[in-house]
Image 1 (spheres, rainbow, N blue to C red):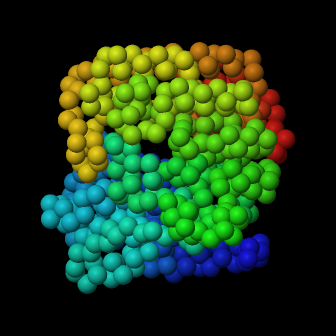
Image 2: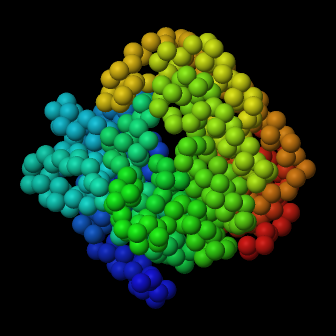
Image 3: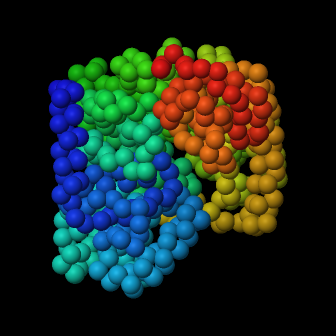
Length: 481
């Protein structure tokens, strides 16, 4: 059954009462993907019932948690540097306890306790509900570890505590894990196999966000297009489901439409998509509903069919380009963004040129490009030599960045004179006299504050643009206001 407004308000009141009674302080930092930041909100909720309120001050904390990422080596190095900082603080405050959460915790497990003497607690992404028991072990003077992967856990029954929230936009997790087994990726090993969250629990969470005046949500998962609810369990076991379960199952297109219809004034985004799993019915739902943002983040990782095969990306370059053609036919204004890995094992200059030519063919709005770093435990890490020199990787990356910046700037320059709906999210980093917000295309727009406020939908006419930002003037409130 769905929660009533009275029940939701009562739940918020109980949470506030709990916060007043809490006496211990939690400092939590998150690195890596959006899922990690969403998970940290779940952790904060679980620990609020154990007597912890969050604090922005490391030195004040009774418990310090770092939610980690194992996707790239740089992220792991950043976490190790933060552990050195925690160690310095712990010498001043020896009662402070330190824990490592997330994918890096799952991958390294006991090594943290053996090598990083600062760490008291190691918890994998599926074990956060065990935190109360693990905290008791730590309080009793013992180290505590739980990195067991789950076939069922989605945290769908936990109302997240919104950390560092602007009160405008929020993540809503809909899936966990991944089945795609890309050879470079640790996610299937650190977050387990794909399972989806029950639709009503997703709607309950969005209900509470709407009631507290949030204006935008992002449906979140490692691979949202694989969302499939048939009563619980792993997606790979769907073939074993009953005929009734199959007939009443909810896929991502159905969930997306459900959310769009139920919340017509709420802006809806989703991330991340996988080209091999995105279906035309998802694109058609996007085209049908004005409140679904016209932006798709569609990672490809390489423009070379040979490298895509080595990566175990289960699509070809042409299939990817065909999908983008179908998107543009149905949603001409849709912006497409990308992820690219540069210098994957055996990548040749010809492979690199294939990637450059793909950028020229698509002309992405934005891109996220990184040099390859070997992840221990992955198929590539076990079976392929990281044989591309760092200097070559950096040179190829620089060439891709130049092309992407050119395309981003040309796209943005083409918007000059046009007017876009923008949701105000925060003050501009460069000027306290300007607001910053995003268009439906996920492009940042900066404009004078005037009478507007955070959370307002405004119409902004673009007067200038860079490769990263639109610059303009608000000409009035949008219809949502």
